[in-house]
Image (cartoon, rainbow, N blue to C red; front, side, top):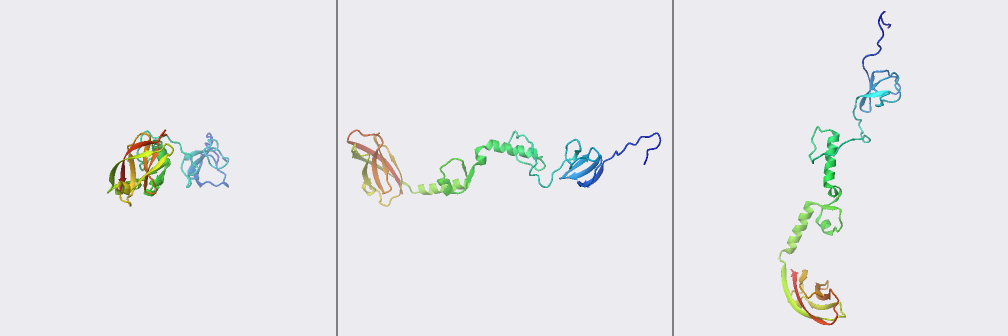
Length: 227
């Protein structure tokens, strides 16, 4: 329709919503379409390509998210303090809080959790965090083992030959201990050159911890913890 005499045609002056974007449709300036969860506005007639915020053919009218946001980029700043996440907070605020937790926790945040007593006692390397129950179970077992523990103080002497790094000292019964005693540890307070150990064959041995230059008699004073 031609403009009345004395007037100029203004052309299209209002936004026309066209629904979902259709690549087979030719759009005009101020046509609005929905595409991948966002609404775009054509800013020229016959815009080139699918809607995107290129400021040449299309601009955002309302920015949204598609059902799959896996490739979306999120810009955020680490929070100043550790705080809980609350409903209604923006995505960048939530990620900022998460980053703060990881930054403060450092290694434990990425460590593998030990969840059983057996694994706790068997683990000998760094990089693991024990679960509270695993620790409690280990302490409970230790307390059970210590319950009824006895101590025997033994004072004796031995002639240690310079040529022998280790010499037999005696069996459990030699020191008045039950033959079926379960020995948990030997704590020695001996001369500087020697020490005492309890071997897997249930016998005590004295051994050199410093080179003995000649045959000598050593006084041994040690305590045996057993059940």
